[in-house]
Every structure is written in C-alpha cells, then in structure tokens.
Image (cartoon, rainbow, N blue to C red; front, side, top):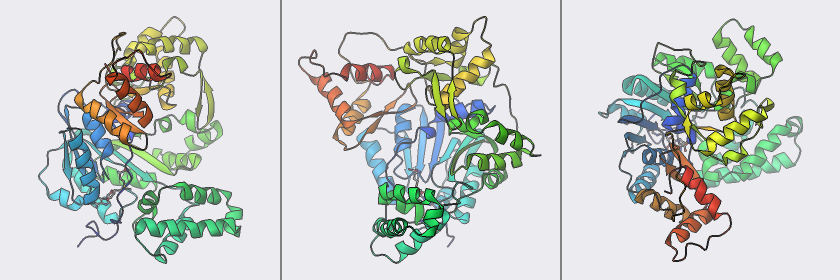
Length: 481
Ligand SMILES: C[S@@+](CC[C@H](N)C(=O)[O-])C[C@H]1O[C@@H](n2cnc3c(N)ncnc32)[C@H](O)[C@@H]1O
C-alpha cells in the first residue's frame, strides 16, 4: 500500500487543533492573484473550493458561510477531524461544505467537479514524497484553467537551527509512553532540561533556547502534528515551484502579503546582491536566505499567461475591495514591517481614515478619491498595497456602507446568531463569518455574550462601556444590522 494511505507516515492519534486562517479566504487569494498579475476568480457566482488536509475544516466552514455562492469541499483522512467539522457546519446550518473523510489517494478516485481554488495549509512539508505526488495529481486533475492553488510549508533555510531539535524531540518522544501528545509533552520536558543545563549547542545557539521555550508554551496536540510525523521535512521553495510547475502551475506571489514587496522585507545591500543573481530562480533562492524564511504561503495559478499591470488601476487590482478591520481613525502614519518602520504622509493617511470610516470600497474608488495634483495613481496604489501588507487595510469581499441607525441592532442571519451563541459558550476567542469581509471576524466570548444580552434586553439603554464600539465594529462588517 502506498505510504499516502493511513496509518503510516502521518500521526492519527491526535486531532488537529481548530484554528482559523484568514489567508485561506478566496478573497485573500484573489488579492494575491491580482497583485501577481493574474485574473481573480469570480466570487459572486457559483465557484468551487477544495481544502486538502483540512483538519477540522474550521476555515472552510467559516468561508462557506461568507460565500453562499461557493461550494466548499474539505478532505482529511482523520475521521475525528472531519466529524468535528461536520458537527460545526450542521450546528450552524451551513450546507455548502462537503466533507471527504478519506486520504488524498482515495479522493483521487472520487468523481469530483473541478475547482477554482485548491488550498492546503500546514500539509505539504508534513506529508511524505508519495503523498506530495498524489497532491500534485489531484491538482493536475481537478484545478480549472486559471484556478488558484495555495500551499503553505516549512521551508529552508529558516529551519536550519531547529532540525537538530526536532531530531531530539523524535528520539525523546519515541522513548516516552502514551499517545502522540503525551509523548511529545514528555519530550519537550527533556529538551527543556538540556536547554536549561547550558549544553554548548544551546550556548552557541541562543535561538535554540528560544525555540524550546516556544515549544513549552505550545499545545501538545499541535506539537505532535508539527514534529512527530515520520515524513516531516522543510522544503526549498524552488523545489516546490518546480513540483508545482510539473502540475502546470506558475508562481504568483505569497499569501503572507508583506513578502510580495521586497522593499518591505530586505535591505538595499541584500537587494542589490540578489539582483545580481542571473535567473529569477536563483533570485528567489537568495531571497529566502535574505529573509531566513521558515514558513511560506505560496500562491500559484494554472495559466501560461500573465498580465503585468500592477500600476494600472483599471486592471483587476482596481476592482478588488479594501476595508479596515480595526478602527479607521487609528490607521497609522508609520507601520512596522520586517525591514523596519515605514512612514506615510500625514495628509494621505488623514484622507484615507475619512474614506475608510465610510466602509469598504474598491481600490479603484480609493485611488480616484485620494488622487490629486501631487499624487500619482501608481504611487497611491503602492502605498495602499503597503498598508494592506502591513495589516492596516485588508482585502474585503464587498463594498459596504454601514447605516447609521439608532435602532437596536439585529443579527444579520440565523447562522450569525448561532455563531455568536457558540463563541459566547466557548472558552476562547472565536470567529464570526462576515460576507462583507469575506472571512472571519475575531470575537471574545465576553463580547459575544454582551452583544447577545444587549439584543435580548428589555431595556436596551443599559449598554456596558465598550459595547457601543463593539457594536459599531460588527456593524461595519455587516454581521449586525
Ligand atoms: C498539520 S495538519 C493541518 C490541518 C489544517 N490544514 C490546519 O492547518 O489547521 C495536517 C492535516 O493533514 C491531514 N493529512 C495528512 N496526510 C493526509 C493524507 N494522505 N490524506 C488526507 N489527509 C491527510 C492530517 O490528518 C491533518 O489533519
């Protein structure tokens, strides 16, 4: 039996912790596509989306709620993971997710439609070479022309230091008792013992001490999936690009948005040295070393053709919608990026704050409104893309103007109401699906409960401090109306 098939290779005695990943949103991927010169997929009509190695498929379920026109499929061979996702979708009455509790190899044999998006987060460098081949076969078979692929993976050279630590973890875990999470927890304790004893490896590499401290703070079910798979292997991005090319794909850019702008991640002397490398392949490899990358979120397209019109606001980028997740009045004039701080002109940011306080809008509208005698549209687009890369702005799904109303707010739908109830009952912050954002909006159980109580209260005048801001915020994302 090929090693793609359970139970060899990948651990199955621990379900994967449930986490939401905004980068998996179709609207986020469309932004990377447009930035990379490809045509975004149409999201207002029936489109299809496949998540491979979905874990509990939490992100797919949230995105299915955000995009009722989309059909989402989630595949994972761990039945416990899939059962959790199915339960969650069922409780929320979200019907546009189809679950496949099967291996990639078995999925290949299923009769499936073709897809606009195929995504895999935290999978490609955790499974073996055979499973990677099956993933490529799935992409070759199921991705539409012009379709987008998201693949994240651990990469080199950023793991150079931790590869020996992982070896210790494996050896210690093998010598320990219990299931995978118990064994990895015991292995981390042994690692901490060695790290605190000041062995020369740790003295020479202080970052290894920091890494061990980080393992000690991580949940053991996460660590088990991260490290205990026989098949774990950090990859070089040029190898991944070659493999994707063999499936007919071209690299577009990164869903870690800041990585799409060299000026924000590498200094000028590194930039000059990289530019001297004779091919784009070597330049990409050198850039990974310049950044010392440990994790990549690559986006590819099935297409031969590229359009390179990033400065042309009439292009696809201009049609995309941008919004602000935080308070628009707090958009910063100086933002932190990997290379350091970058600043924007105060009058530009001041105008942007006013525009964003009216709600999300297209990049084209923003550029038109911000344009003036002294501002060139290419420069405005670049600044807006930098602000998106820095997280001050974000790709949204819909232009939306929240209404000013003194009426008591209501939940936008029964599904949204159920999400509030779920978050209120959970011990940790959860996500509310927003069709405006095209993704999850984080909410604490305390805030969820406060909103539920306020909406249900006999006397709505009694509003706790901070609740008004929260309601205003949720109103901007269209989850309260
Ligand atoms: C590290 S977890 C990532 C889960 C999820 N994508 C996330 O990031 O939250 C990898 C997932 O891939 C699944 N997986 C590994 N090999 C597989 C295979 N051959 N077929 C189907 N699922 C697989 C595992 O069960 C696990 O849930």
